Amino acid sequence: EVHLVESGGGLVQAGGSLRLSCATSGFTFHDYAIGWFRQAPGKEREGVSCISNTEGESFYVDSVKGRFTISRDNVKNTAYLQMNSLNPEDTGVYYCAATIKNLGLSSDEYDYWGQGTQVTVSS
Image (cartoon, rainbow, N blue to C red; front, side):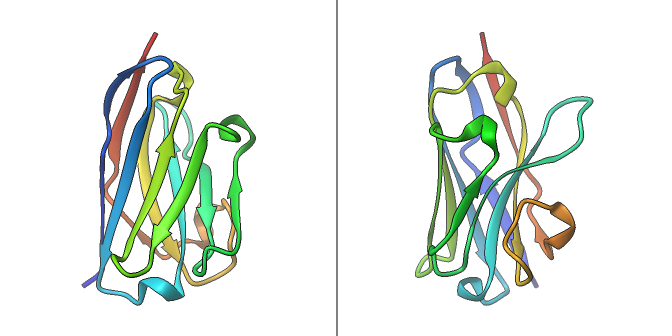
Protein backbone atom coordinates (compact mmCIF):
# COMPACT_ATOMS: atom_id res chain seq x y z
CA GLU A 1 0.00 0.00 0.00
CA VAL A 2 1.30 3.44 -0.94
CA HIS A 3 1.81 6.02 1.77
CA LEU A 4 3.06 9.59 1.67
CA VAL A 5 3.11 11.31 5.04
CA GLU A 6 3.92 14.99 5.37
CA SER A 7 5.22 16.51 8.56
CA GLY A 8 6.90 19.68 9.75
CA GLY A 9 4.08 22.13 9.31
CA GLY A 10 3.04 24.56 11.99
CA LEU A 11 2.58 28.17 12.97
CA VAL A 12 5.44 30.55 12.27
CA GLN A 13 5.88 34.30 12.18
CA ALA A 14 6.57 36.13 8.96
CA GLY A 15 10.24 35.88 8.09
CA GLY A 16 10.58 32.52 9.77
CA SER A 17 11.42 29.10 8.38
CA LEU A 18 9.97 25.62 8.30
CA ARG A 19 11.21 22.35 6.87
CA LEU A 20 8.57 19.98 5.57
CA SER A 21 9.24 16.28 5.20
CA CYS A 22 7.46 13.71 3.07
CA ALA A 23 8.08 10.15 4.19
CA THR A 24 7.04 7.55 1.65
CA SER A 25 6.51 3.81 1.38
CA GLY A 26 4.85 1.28 -0.86
CA PHE A 27 6.39 2.32 -4.18
CA THR A 28 9.83 2.56 -5.74
CA PHE A 29 10.73 6.03 -4.54
CA HIS A 30 13.80 6.53 -6.72
CA ASP A 31 11.71 5.97 -9.87
CA TYR A 32 9.33 8.83 -9.08
CA ALA A 33 9.57 12.58 -9.26
CA ILE A 34 8.24 14.37 -6.19
CA GLY A 35 6.18 17.52 -6.10
CA TRP A 36 5.03 19.83 -3.36
CA PHE A 37 1.67 21.55 -3.70
CA ARG A 38 -0.27 23.89 -1.47
CA GLN A 39 -3.84 25.00 -1.09
CA ALA A 40 -4.81 28.21 0.66
CA PRO A 41 -8.32 28.73 2.02
CA GLY A 42 -10.71 29.55 -0.80
CA LYS A 43 -8.08 29.03 -3.47
CA GLU A 44 -7.20 26.28 -5.88
CA ARG A 45 -4.30 23.98 -5.21
CA GLU A 46 -1.08 25.19 -6.80
CA GLY A 47 2.21 23.53 -7.54
CA VAL A 48 5.07 24.91 -5.46
CA SER A 49 8.09 22.85 -6.42
CA CYS A 50 9.12 19.53 -7.90
CA ILE A 51 12.27 17.47 -8.19
CA SER A 52 13.21 14.71 -10.58
CA ASN A 53 13.84 11.18 -9.40
CA THR A 54 17.63 11.59 -9.67
CA GLU A 55 17.72 15.17 -8.30
CA GLY A 56 18.96 16.32 -11.68
CA GLU A 57 16.18 18.82 -12.17
CA SER A 58 13.97 20.92 -9.96
CA PHE A 59 11.40 23.62 -10.58
CA TYR A 60 9.77 26.29 -8.46
CA VAL A 61 6.76 28.50 -8.85
CA ASP A 62 7.90 32.12 -9.20
CA SER A 63 6.50 33.19 -5.84
CA VAL A 64 8.86 30.90 -3.90
CA LYS A 65 12.03 31.09 -5.97
CA GLY A 66 15.01 32.00 -3.84
CA ARG A 67 13.13 31.19 -0.63
CA PHE A 68 12.21 27.50 -0.90
CA THR A 69 14.50 24.56 -1.61
CA ILE A 70 13.33 21.09 -2.55
CA SER A 71 15.47 18.02 -1.93
CA ARG A 72 15.18 14.28 -1.55
CA ASP A 73 16.97 11.37 0.03
CA ASN A 74 16.59 8.24 -2.09
CA VAL A 75 18.00 6.09 0.71
CA LYS A 76 15.46 7.28 3.26
CA ASN A 77 12.63 7.46 0.67
CA THR A 78 11.91 10.95 1.92
CA ALA A 79 11.54 14.34 0.26
CA TYR A 80 11.92 17.74 1.87
CA LEU A 81 10.88 21.32 1.34
CA GLN A 82 12.95 23.92 3.14
CA MET A 83 10.95 27.13 3.38
CA ASN A 84 12.68 30.35 4.38
CA SER A 85 11.53 33.96 4.58
CA LEU A 86 7.95 32.84 4.94
CA ASN A 87 5.18 35.36 4.49
CA PRO A 88 1.42 35.17 5.15
CA GLU A 89 0.77 34.39 1.48
CA ASP A 90 2.54 31.06 2.04
CA THR A 91 -0.21 29.94 4.41
CA GLY A 92 -2.04 26.79 3.36
CA VAL A 93 -2.12 23.04 3.46
CA TYR A 94 1.01 21.61 1.88
CA TYR A 95 0.87 18.28 0.09
CA CYS A 96 3.58 16.10 -1.34
CA ALA A 97 2.89 13.91 -4.34
CA ALA A 98 4.70 11.43 -6.54
CA THR A 99 4.65 10.98 -10.30
CA ILE A 100 6.30 8.57 -12.70
CA LYS A 101 5.16 10.73 -15.60
CA ASN A 102 6.53 14.07 -16.72
CA LEU A 103 8.22 16.33 -14.20
CA GLY A 104 6.19 19.46 -13.65
CA LEU A 105 3.81 21.39 -11.44
CA SER A 106 0.52 20.13 -12.85
CA SER A 107 -1.33 18.16 -10.21
CA ASP A 108 -2.98 16.07 -12.92
CA GLU A 109 0.37 14.37 -13.59
CA TYR A 110 0.74 13.02 -10.06
CA ASP A 111 -0.19 9.49 -9.09
CA TYR A 112 0.11 9.41 -5.32
CA TRP A 113 -0.69 12.04 -2.70
CA GLY A 114 -0.19 12.61 0.99
CA GLN A 115 -2.80 13.91 3.37
CA GLY A 116 -1.21 17.32 3.83
CA THR A 117 0.29 19.39 6.61
CA GLN A 118 -0.89 22.83 7.66
CA VAL A 119 1.45 25.80 7.39
CA THR A 120 0.28 29.06 8.93
CA VAL A 121 2.36 32.22 8.69
CA SER A 122 1.33 35.09 10.92
CA SER A 123 2.08 38.70 10.11
